[in-house]
Image (cartoon, rainbow, N blue to C red):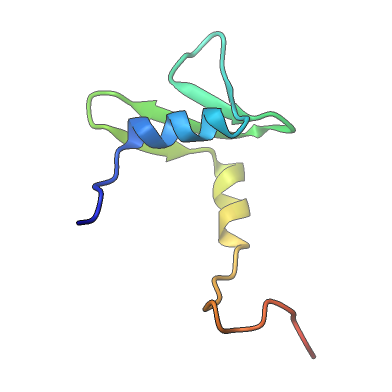
Length: 74
């Protein structure tokens, strides 16, 4: 059985991993080393939105298969 995604649980998981809650906006968390990397939780829709800076960082991630080398070779 697969577990359904919960935005609220994901927010708590990020806080447990060191992300910080905003003091002025409790539904916003940010990365402790780069405050421009933010995630906002919408309680009404149980959804997350991310800052443009975080979106840019995520776009840089290249997914690889577990069997594929993670080392880039020219």
